[in-house]
Length: 426
Image (cartoon, rainbow, N blue to C red; front, side, top):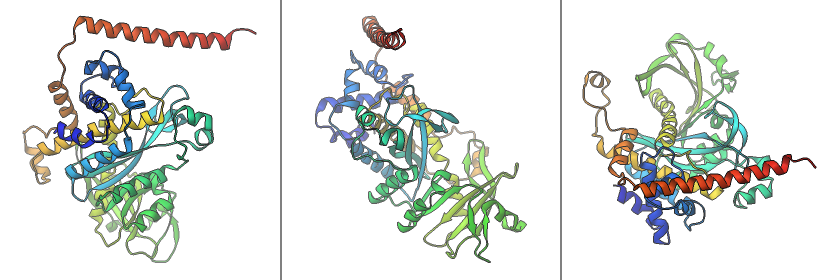
């Protein structure tokens, strides 16, 4: 299966050397290497220097967007079905100010304002699994888009312009639909639900959505055309408007919530979906639209699937080094992230192929003592052990240690000279 996955992208490389390096790179991402940087991946692959890995990300001739298209078709082929497209962003904490798109900004990764890059991602989730299928690096408007010197220093293409996160998400959704994705639903958090242009574009494509919105969102109740805040609409609901349903299985079992829906506007297929935590009473709100009439259970299912992209981020960062890169260049960022997406897609495909089809019998699962199905972390552990290279010789280990320390000494000299130059008296 690994050979088949790599064969999909083999034609994207014009020469055999980068093609072989790409294979070694992805194998390194699947290995047990602690930090999946070019240095450690090169040592894992048996190279004498990290040069081949660095050239693969920076100067080798291949198009990361074409490989991204291959990853997307690979995921759709293995996960199949009428899955759901999920949009969300994640942060990559960085030091310094030269990495493409970096600035001090809020990121959910840290839960506060930090110096970071932010990428918007598209995931595909079906009953068979979930994986990342597209990515866009956010380029801040004032600190990057309008600074030509910064752009050229980080290799940002001239045709890249500022785009909001919802706009970047829409670009990825439209690309997936144009490529043959048959998803009937899109879901995302408040960043995307609060954007009316994003919602209108999805309606124009005939794609239903379940998008989270803030409690302050104003909606027009159909019965009397009254405009209310979303949280105010809850007070008018009778007790029998609430229905307890599961939003899908979680780590501790079914995630049961109380759900209610209210038609809004003049469109019979447009509604406000409300989720209430039975224990705390906490509320969450979603704007929903569908081309045809659907049951409440369908909206609940899509709302529950939104958390799958968080699982994708966790697996991609924890298992295949999505955020382990040490690159500043625009092209290098997209190449590393794309190859990490391929590694995650491969693990997902293997998990899917080894999981027998079962009915969603929760009572049976509660009684069964059988092992759980192979998970992405377990598969990564097994594959890393199976593909492990023989132990390196003492001479090789010492050579790599010497190379690292020389490189670190050079970096230290540069930092000290810069500090002494800027801090010395006139």
